[in-house]
Image (cartoon, rainbow, N blue to C red; front, top):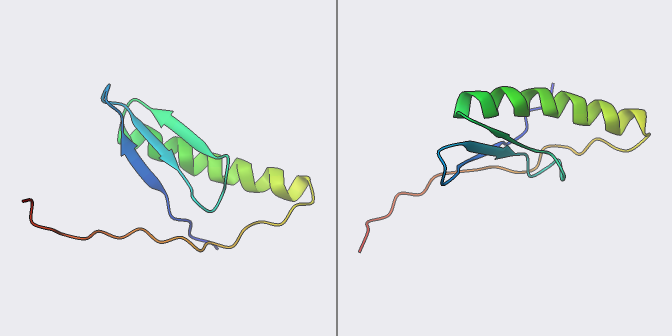
Length: 73
């Protein structure tokens, strides 16, 4: 079982995008964060299956996202 970091970003129109830094080329857009989560979850499985089918290596998870709190000036 592998755990990949997913980055979620809110769009100006209120929709959400999501991508996986360790799986280049994989990105999705949904109307809600929940929809983006569902789509990226499915996309990860499909993307990895495609890599395996093509005989390409499956990247090991190596990215990590964190939060840093700062005071606004």
